[in-house]
Image 1 (spheres, rainbow, N blue to C red):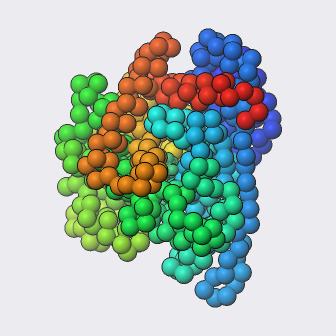
Image 2 (cartoon, rainbow, N blue to C red):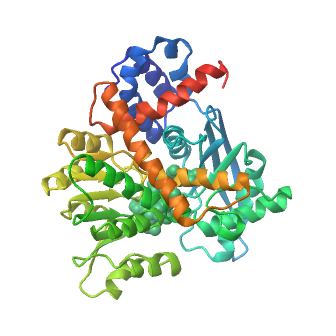
Image 3 (spheres, protein in one colour):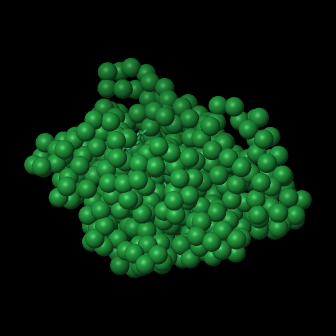
Length: 449
Ligand code: NDP
Ligand code: 2IT
């Protein structure tokens, strides 16, 4: 890691000294600060206004107890979080994650990333994130519902359509958003757009379910076309088999790509004939089973235990769509050695710093998460617009807006990279383009938040 600008390096060191036990958060900050060094060099006014020291400190960090009763009558206790990271350009906005690995560090890294991602969408949304270390695996429908209700019983007082608007992330999809929305309404007596990812009859937006995966492919295609390539005819590996992975697969297939592998945290399936997405949807969305089941249902496909092995499959395009740090330097080198030409991130921070370095050093077309997975939150922003005007748009209308937003994010990341002498480096470009709007808003609003 190298943060060249002295002021940024000092701010980072001071943050690191105060953030013991928050490795994911520090990893995310380090990557952004590396990119922002030339901006800090050029903008003493940002330094004078303390923009860099302020932007790494959440405006508010809320941690709370979530107690609930399991089916056997035992009292269970989990830790709930919401980080309200930055509201310079709009109400806090970002998902809720339910996974045993959720910690203050994970929530802060996700919230920090969200600030820049949301800015890139050009919609007026600040950055936030939340969740709990609750593990949805193996829980009954009733347990999920009671957990979500208890979670919202605390969260509701901190959120609102003009304050903070949560949505889904790992372990939180339409079902969980429904239970949370129901509880919010019960507690406040208000029917309002306080969450996104709602079901259509309750004010949800068409295409929100598909948006992150579709947006990822719109971005990937744009990036490839700029290099004289396209998704059509390419062999593609996608990690994960959740919301993002499934709709990335759907759009990749629509664009003529051949997806040969998908995974979950236990292992991966390889199908040389191309993944049958209807089977994956049935297993994951309807029956909520493991990806292993795919091999039992599709003759000729092979299941391998252990999810990381998926990166050893030769492919033209790799789409990490599971979780943070799921692709390390060695795995990146294997992808490159096997002829991979593009990597686009559906998950948040799936590539370790060593992996990113490997992609950039080998001239791989590399799309960083905060640019390439912004389609989900962008469509959440479109859901907020529809709620505000009390109208709903058709699927083609939303899809067209999403497509336009993803193309625009690619163009602005590319332009910002070139402006600062790092042409082709979309990591730097996305960080700089996302940062500038937030920094200017903070500057304009004066010190304090
Ligand atoms: P889901 O819960 O729908 O799916 C998550 C998938 O990733 C599952 O296949 C899961 O496997 C796998 N996974 C989760 N944790 C791990 C882990 N520790 N190791 C290996 N595999 C894991 O979540 P989403 O698809 O919504 O989210 C996937 C990623 O995309 C996350 O990084 C999320 O932050 C990001 N993202 C999501 C957006 C959205 O709109 N939903 C928007 C932008 C980014 P298993 O079932 O075994 O746990
Ligand atoms: O990481 C993300 O951008 C999301 N989980 C989606 C957030 C949102 O508010 O739709």
